[in-house]
Image (cartoon, rainbow, N blue to C red):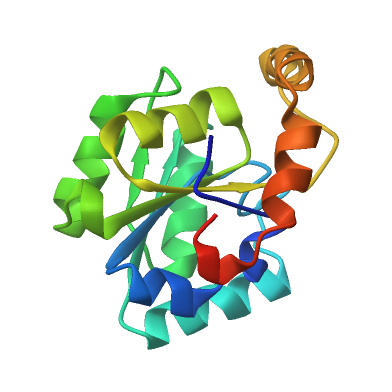
Length: 170
């Protein structure tokens, strides 16, 4: 279960992250920061990331997407990229924290999948944020995972979490 669920990255309350002592945020790429397969960060997400930086927080992109795409998108927002297979990879999340010079208690993870992003972040003790996928298009294996998410009640879970106030922390 994530600590917080929001519809989009741009809806994550930055004050909440700061109050929790979060120093850096690790982001999934596809359907979290950008629509699946896109090479461009949407305007509202870019503004939110600018505000994140203005508050002194750092970020990194962790993805199993094509390496050149991950590097280009991460460079476009001025953050390091940590890529490679498989997903989820606790090793890649640990490497991202080393690059960011943070610990699990000072790191948040933002992703669109329960069984990869949130599960891996929770296993390491990160503050996890679940977002709704930005696009219905997805990799075939992700579609299979979405089916399992529906079976375990993702829609009900997200409605429950959205019913809470963000100051609760999820």
